[in-house]
Length: 111
Image 1 (cartoon, helix red, strand yellow):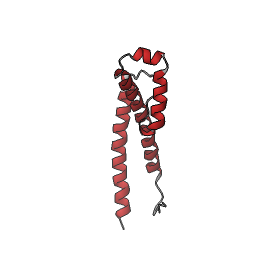
Image 2 (tube, rainbow, N blue to C red):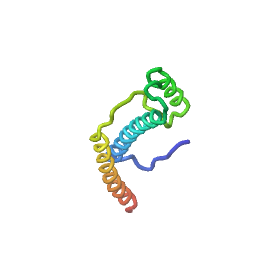
Image 3 (tube, one colour):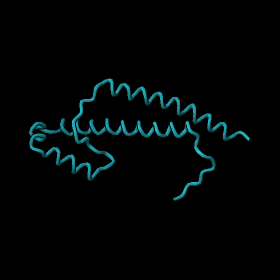
């Protein structure tokens, strides 16, 4: 499938796209940690499951079968400030992206 570009992407659009991709990666890392915690919380004996190495094997199998919903391979204590900073960064990006994309769209519609 080929895409035709009528105009080159401006520098700010590229920066916003790059930032969006970075935010998506950070979000997926958070989700992987949440999936890890949920899997352990659902276990009858999470300590034994981890100590035996069976949990690591489960994570490897799960990640191979479900690449779009991976479980974090290492436990990481997520500090509240990390999540708070992510939320602030996301809100900031949303506002800047909406404003800039509106400007780009308006300038392309002018004759």
